[in-house]
Amino acid sequence: MDRSEKLQTMTFAVPGPSNTHATLDLAVERAGALGIEQMVVATSTGKTALEAAERFDGRVIAVTLSAGHWERYCPPEPETIAQLQTRGVRVLTGTHTLLGGIDGGLSSLGGVSAAEIIARTYYTISQGTKVAVECALMAADAGELNMDLEAISIAGTGGGADTALVIQPAFSNTFFDLRIREILAMPR
Image 1: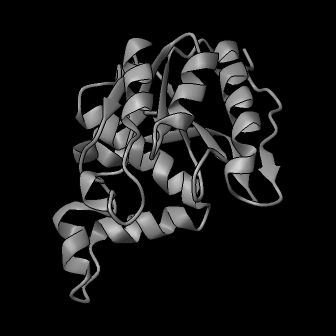
Image 2: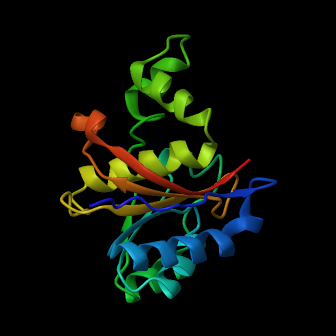
């Protein structure tokens, strides 16, 4: 039985938050078509995750920047996080799997880690691809994903969302088991 289907990737002319609504709409639509019940959303302030939770009936895991990045970028907004928690969204703040932790600190000394090579490789597709994969790994490592089921992972470039992937999740210690099944949206 042939289960092939023709899918199109939505490509945005420019990256960034202006693509958030279209990315979330597409992700929710595809999740419904595939019966996917778990979604990972990269979020700095919590706003993108809140928008996702308002549209998606399944389980949403919001992954924030690690606390060590809050001063440079921005921390989660307490009011938005409270709204997420009221909706049952799990908000996760942890060490960035690919460009963080001790490897990230050591790279400031001039070295390059295997994790950084992997991260930079994903960047060749888009910043959102790297972040979506990284957030899925973080959510898996935190025990927040059903590892037997696919998930939608959403991220963006400079805020908002412009990238959506269908993934088969993996833990960081089994990283090469992670599969990007579909690229739903990404910037050109």
